Length: 148
Image (cartoon, rainbow, N blue to C red; front, top):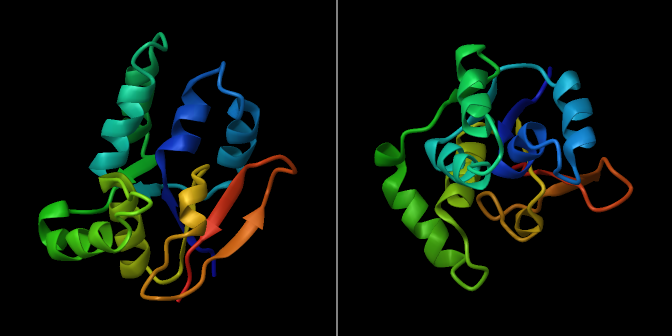
């Protein structure tokens, strides 16, 4: 069974921004992933902010929704208590709202992996477990797979 992929901002920005150092990796990775990729509104907000100076960047992100490539699959309102607990637990990192939402999404979807470029996901734990980290690019790109 294929794992469901939960999308962080880094790979999304890298896909949209041709000048991003991970752009080629992102294009290759996206072509191999089963769609839709799940994400949350906090990741979309962060991504749109990061590509605000990229011509057509924000429109590119929104077009991925229309094409069914990415899908919002999280309601912050429903998970607010758990998100608050995660952000308190990792306040020394600190954990962003987007990261907390992604970790919570992984907790709710046990057979999932988080596609990220963020090394903070090497620290975060889903329900106390250790993540399996796969090095998919010999440089620094990592997929943090948060498993039970």
